[in-house]
Image (cartoon, rainbow, N blue to C red; front, side):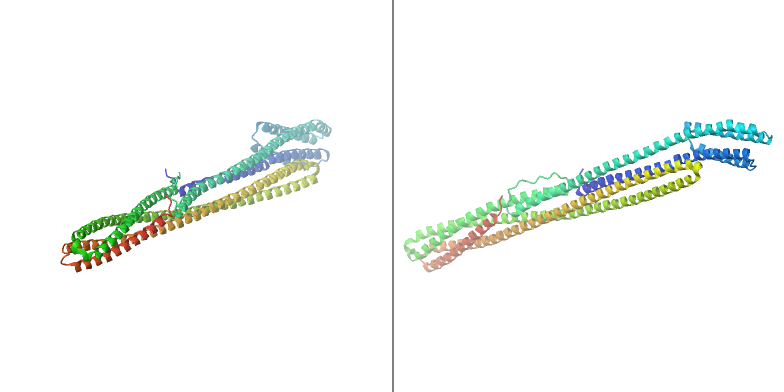
Length: 563
């Protein structure tokens, strides 16, 4: 399956986003768990302790009303005793609904039975009082009544110790939950940062390494060095396709330059032969002109010389035609090379567009991480609210302790419960402070992730600069090829001009041959033809020299390239 650059970037960004969401989700879950745990400790276990103390207070109230009735003859005391009994039953019923543990239910059942027996005992005391048997009533209160109260206090003390143990165990579990949350969040945080850095480094490598390699190869070609091996890029994306197109262009350019160099050598050799032949024909023509006056005595020799000139001119004509064919082939190859360079330049422009798209994707990821940092700040605000609640709970516990101190003996149970609530509030505040520190660490690591994304953006920008440099190298190559093409076209025009002059000379030689046969009757005509041939040969020599000069210039241009 082909993975384009955009797909690779999308996968990397999604992986980083999932890690960050997992860290945020775990942090929120742990905070919720700790909050629920402390809420349960305060609303359930602490409330049970308070209700147990309220049961003990109601028993104390019953004892006070019993003594007030017996000793002070307070007729309102029976009603107050009944009211305390009703309060006890109401609190006991509510506490029974909250209790789930069998051992706690056993404690409550024992307390209820003792209170029930004490209520019946009160009714017995009332009957004795109404019968004016106060001594017996006092004896029962000091013996059996005290026994009921002592039993209730013992059961109440055991019940409170059992409930206090449950409260301590719950507090320890909540503390352990906070430690576990801190450890897991720190571990996931480190993993997320390392994973994000690794993904950013990997994406940077798969983009910048091939681009730098292509830029170096393009720079060598721009300097005229075509001897490098093909670029090997393992990417199966746009950069891999760009490398393949670049290799194909370099191979085509190397082939064309080799062929142009070979044809230039052939043109140079042919031009030298043409120059030598032109000089030879010029000398022959001059000799013909000087001996034209001796036509009568050397007609046969003159005809032979004309035949040699005709043969030489035919060879020159054949050589010029071959030069023209080679020049056309060189021109065609140069045009192919120019087209290949244009395709390479288009590929570079496509790479620039892709790099710009990569830059946009990386900037988008940085925005996502910044939003996540804002969410971490919101979690920090929630933690501040929890801290405020803990402080308020601590203040309420202090107020409860003050009220319990004012109540004296009856408020001692409230003082114990208020102290436990204060401890829970302090633990809640400490846990909230620890969570706040974790949120600060998350925000700091989120900032590091943003810096890592900025570094990736800088790497992509550097890749864009390198690709632009490669594009400029391709444009320089294209200008050099256009210069070579222009030189070749000038050579082709000169060859055509030489070919036309050669045909004209050959035609003149044929006319001269016919005239030579009639040399006896047309010496003046032969002389004029010889002068015309001499002028044509000088023109051929000039064109051959121009061809030789153009060939040297072409070889100098080709010398810039190393194949």
